[in-house]
Image 1 (cartoon, rainbow over the protein chains, first blue to last red):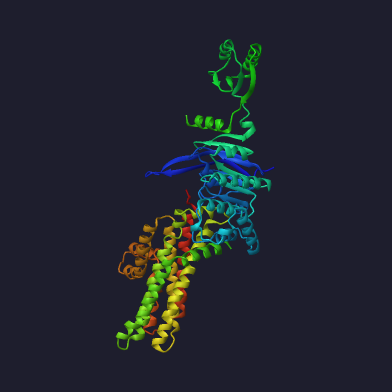
Image 2: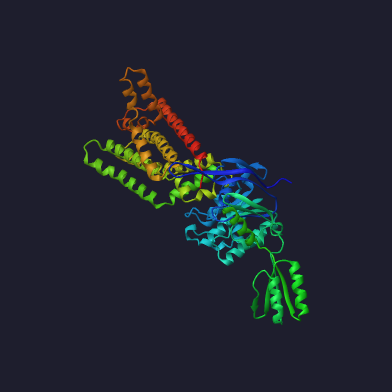
Length: 311
Length: 254
């Protein structure tokens, strides 16, 4: 099946300063996003995430490379017909009301008046903006504007939704609502491509992620594959540990033993050491409370990749 | 449909701005005052009402064209509202033409209101209607379309302040550029003569749109003259819009 987004060697240079020095902000990027997936595009500030999204949406022009959106070259206007886009900090025509703004967006997609009315009513309900629909946008709060931004991104019933930092600046309730909407979009069969640096949200939502650092793609794949590295650490919690056992446990552990109210925490580097520690503990009459393998989180992986890129 | 939607939104932005009403109110006041000034003259009432009325229409029409035109595109970029428009199925030329048409629509309404007032006041003072007045205002409106296109062109790559300076400069030069043809004839040197003519053709000749003085003096207007002037204005406007589109097509919205 043809990817819904297919990026080949896309790169971008900006000219900066008085001498118009050329600076490469996005190195040649190859990436494919499949239909129906939630794809997380991760990276620290300045990694090139927004640059990539602006290239895909025609706000900036590529220095080299190409990209196809739903099978169309990104330079074709028709490619945008089935795309919804929410920029990081959406700015609106503040003299319009929420309803007028959505109507304008519907017109730009060439939607007929009855369809526009239906879609606007549905989206106002989805984003809980019905009561503010006829207020001018200059009276909207930040959260309301973010929700209106999402509504305008869905006005054309898009197959592909591109969101730039959709959780940015939202309170916990707003973030939860945004997560629910993204999951609902996937359930409706849409593809969601979003950039973020809020990793817990990404971990919950995404089927696949790509990590970008310093303008270069560092890693891409399914979360389960990316994080499927050997366990980093195994934590063994013991009670009733005799003094003599402490010395042998310390010899097996790769970190100092921790004496906690529930018992002694032993951090072991691998399963072989765990077996040895368990045998020794049972032989000495200690009680095993828990054995918890510490798996790599997306945050651990992200930090490692980003630090690797900046070194 | 996209061009119409952008044009309508541009018009709506202008008419929801109180400054436009202040300018229009001031213009109408000045046109109305021409009757009072005319009352002070002896036998020149009609001429003064028409002269002052046409001058006010041109002056305030130009002011609105420049004032709104210089921020037409730069404001969209500065306020980042363009981030929600360009990702939609809107071509960049379509966006620019939509903005231009929106401002021309605003000018049509404002100049229309001023023109109708001048026409009615002239009819009131004269006792007879002068349709040629409306033709003069119509031809002058084509000149305003050129000024708007100049402002739009600068707005695609420059700040509002610089755009204002450049557009006013082009307007002033444009009003006087007709003299270049006379100036060129003073030189026997073919190369220099041609260079002056090229300069004349590159600049807008806004002086040729001034039909008002002929109307005020009661001279007839030749239909051919009106036609060629309007055609020149529309052609020059198209040239400026194409230039603006060529620049706008290459812009990055960072």
